[in-house]
Length: 130
Image: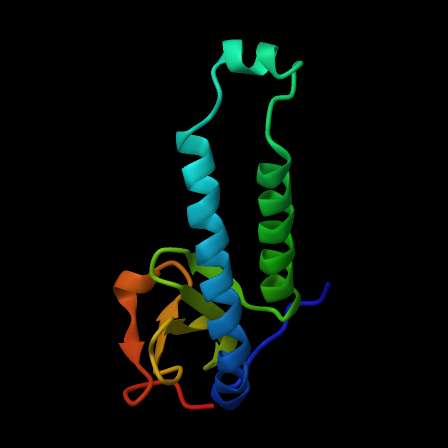
């Protein structure tokens, strides 16, 4: 799959979709963590006839995988589940950087160098406009 490069406008147009998907990913992830916390002991597994995981767990994993693939297929990078952090590859001054958005923010308002990550976020009002 060819890497997609976004303009600020294109990234902002995806926010309704991303808001919904990221919320869904977070819900499924929390439920998966709850299942992990209550993982069966080896004795429980033996008593259940050797079934390692309950069907609901498998369904949740499948759902999570589909949600993440749906986000990835649009060229976005979900960087952090807890904060709902999403990066969008873009070109600025001949180099690739990331536009940066976090769940709950009204629009894409930040960018950062690829290596800098969230800690290096800078306002789009300062740089790059595309």
